[in-house]
Image (tube, rainbow, N blue to C red; front, side, top):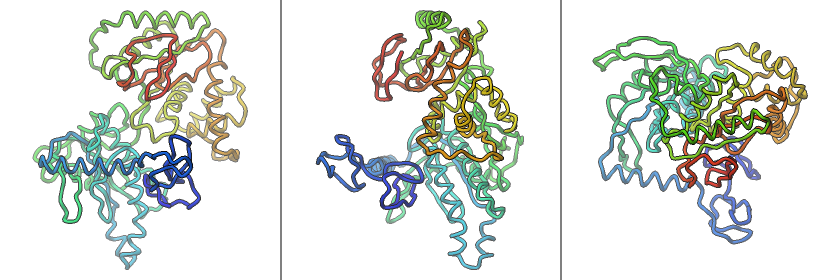
Length: 469
């Protein structure tokens, strides 16, 4: 059975995809019975079933294409990615048979497609040795530049894992304004982008060396909070009059919420938030007295929730209170427990460019004073990507690993000194912390919620989940 989400082939008896974990059928909202993916009514209770997301997506695609066809195209600012396999022609020629050549290249092409889909991009062109992908259209994303860079890094990481020196890819990423339009190909329609920025992204991919990623200054400016790069200076590109400033993308960096406000620009004074600031200060005083709190900041997008949390965190730092930060990123859904991972990295003081052995030693030193079990320590190190390759892995089923990890996170705040105070900024649903730790639970986009202010002691039910304030 093929998964409609990622294309992975599964056993006929599977209920969930082995490749991405998606449901292989349609779950009945009335009784929970799992039905076949073509079913329209539940086989147990006869309730009408909701169509699979792919069917809805196909209908949305048709609507987008019809709309673009009627308008003749529209302007969009988005991120374009080009990737191809270096020396693919030589590889195919050396095998002597085009079918054998494509069989050799197909795993890399599949990997490219999966990386684009993981970060909500669209592969609008796929050739025998590469792909062209768009981020930010037709589904809009304000962080499309970040998503494009993450997809590029995922491609390179996946190819590295093949451990085949003959299979190397090069990637170019550029952000700019293009014209998106529907293109007729006789028997089908496709979504495409046109303009000088598309050609620039293609030229950048051709300039990249094998195993590298080149990004433009525009892409870097839109995503620099999250990226590690090497400046390459101004580069001349065939067909482009002015030289283009380029960067070599080398990795990601941890980006706490406060980093957004420390970019060097001058901040305007925070006004009109004295009542909310007083509420946060009062909850902090309660926590210092031993009565820990979780505070939710809820409001329309752009109203200033992040700025309020930043100012409160800065005031806590000014009082000598340790502040731990993590963010729920829109593109982080591909990473399990992403906000917990970010929070633990900040808690243990892990640095991006630090050697794995140094980071592992720092975590073990911290845990030694907290008396955690060997199993919990192993699961934590594995979760942080710091497992010791020289030690035998502990055999645990996925459910036990998840339970150990969550128990560790719940126990960690109670393991420190009884008189310690810390502020945990984590935009996650509910509370992970049970001791005197005031939490700032900051949700980035909460437009559907009717509650628009800080309400200590209440509970908010909304489509995104339950928040305790």
